[in-house]
Amino acid sequence: MTAEAPPPAKTEQPADLKPSAGKLSGRVAVVLLFEVLPRHRLWGYSCFVRGPKALANPPGMVFAKVLGSGHQGGFGLQPSGSRQARFCLFDQEHEADNFLASPLVQGYARRSGEFFSAKLRAYSCRGSWSGANIEVTAEAPSAGPIMSLTRASIRPSRARQFWRMQPASELALAQSQGCLMATGVGEAPFLRQATLTVWSDVTAMDNYARSGAHLAAIQAAYGGGFFSESMFARFSPLALRGVWRGRTFGS
Image (tube, rainbow, N blue to C red):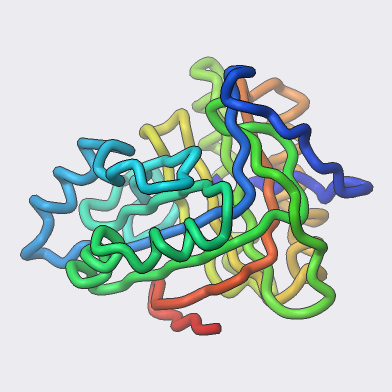
């Protein structure tokens, strides 16, 4: 899934929703991307099957998703047998740091050929993910990289139309100046998809969001009621580290 919503006219901070209201909110996001080495594939598969339970419920974690990826980390319908992702929300930054330094996460890195981690604060977020919200606690950076998350639950009746638009959108993303990383991830084949991207700066992201095949795809998706739930979030990175799809990140 490569569709990014056009940027909102202004940044709005979601309400502070408490667990008692049936929803959760998180302040600091952690993204993990890793490619499991062949000799550890059985271990990787078992982690994926166990889902969020495999994360051992670390202190401060209020939301977690265990995600698969497309072939070679791309966006097609063919799943990858080795690439996985984790998306987590924490109340506080030190809790995210503790998670990143934990034996669990270090075990991911040791068993992987490529491993990438990001610690993030949102500066823009619209929508929800399984009812969860990301609190906006950062300002849009004036310079330097940003990371974006686009995810949606696709209505079954619209899935075929959605995937027909995918090749043109993916090509537009690959050709976009300033796109440093793009990977497709998902909770379930065909219907619950997401895209994670890293951009050189806000301007590069905005230029992509407002142009070409991407803009046509997102307008068609919203006009046609393709999604039962969606989230579009942009993040100011606190840390980007590791290697993904051949590119090295460090901060």
